[in-house]
Image (cartoon, rainbow, N blue to C red; front, top):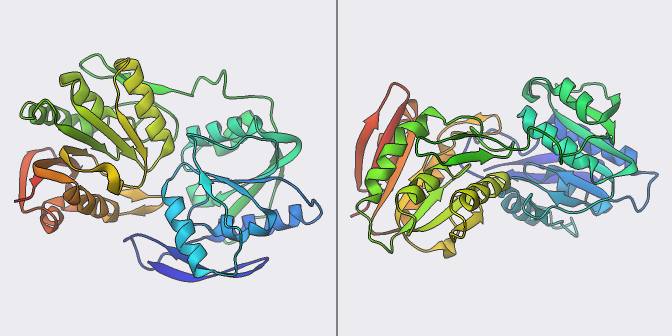
Length: 379
């Protein structure tokens, strides 16, 4: 993990970026610095203002604004771990806020919303439309991000959803925009759910923060027939995990073939968990499945006979295999005796080597020019 000091209006913070990615990366960027400075200026003459922070990354905004008693909502479950690590590194910071998610977001009205601009244009539109419903009449949104990471059409998205009051001068390739409430809301937004149908007729939909929500990604397409094959060998009381489930497509394929199985879905994204739950309830009314908003597999989840995985290979702007390696370790710990991991991954990431760190038996089942399907187990 990488640790360094962020200079904030209230003094320096020692911040940690957890995980096994690039050790040179900091736990904040210039957009966090600009948002902290702009927020402190806005709030200095507004005692008692109610503040909401949306999609903080590693705790820079949450800890840097603690004197204003902010509330937090984030799609990413990993923020909870980051806050715990960084609060421990900064014992002088008091009253560390608790992160909520889109499964149970806080209610308004808020006088200031501090928003990290996401990379996806649809998710940005969703956020701004949702914020229109919780922002006070005189409230403001301070939305910031690194210019190179702003989504295409971001200017149009802001113009369609909110009223842009001021575009602050760029600094260190970061941009912050101040907005007031718009008239549009989520209720009638056509982009709320997007999806596709599987070959078996099951409809798969997802909210905007979810990977590949409009069409089946080609890696998953390669994996799906092998899911059906793997299910045929399972006992009637077998437990199956759709790990990093996204819209739940792998678990849905499993339920289509074996609806009596015990299915669990986990994802670090709360919008992914909401989407998987939505899809299961629509495709299999009355069926009971388990859903966890968590980074990986909760320890209390127990052992599984089959774990299905299409691991993410990017975290924000960081690309690599560090997320997959962490998921492999967790999957190995949660495999039942005789259990198997069935996964698809990008060919160039060399999972045929890294899987062997945690699994004694690794077999390639399929491949195309971009993706490889593996089955892995332990002796």
